[in-house]
Length: 217
Ligand SMILES: [Mn+2]
Image 1: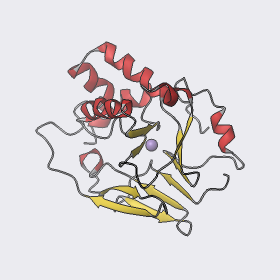
Image 2: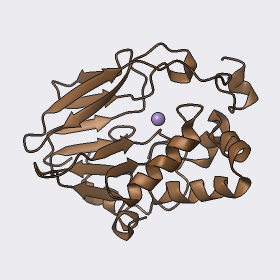
Image 3: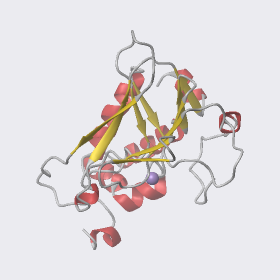
Image 4: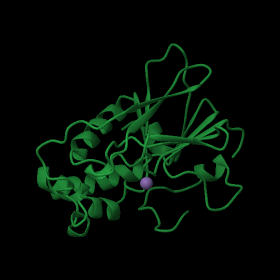
């Protein structure tokens, strides 16, 4: 993992027209599908190449990984040691990104109290499991995830907030579309792309989730 990425709780990224495509994954990428362990390894490999930027969401935690099946999947396909390695990597992930000093990208959204500044986020020691309870500056747009949306996205607050959700047919039962946002330098106009779920592989839905969640699938 790049040392610069590991040392900052808030990553500032600058897009220029000469740059190749860069992808920002806003958390929740660790337990949104039955094949998530393979995807997580792929993303971490890309992360090393600095072509893809991973943010931490509430699913990149030990408790959520246990409930939603990521832990079970990793134990089944890899080993107990990889469970610990993933947990350690998740603690290294930035909590948010800022693109060209204009677009704030975070998993859950803004905060339960007003007045939180980017400098406050930079001060957070994120090398721990996230707390169970909830824990802006000259920005044009906030991009967050965290909620299923039927069309894969929702634009609110006069275009100042976009929710984007990239797991189509969430938990193999919600029937929602997935979406991602493409920002192009230099105007950073958000272009939203939606997509539908691929046919499910020959694995029982939520096969690695704990017994409580399997009751609903
Ligand atoms: Mn979430």
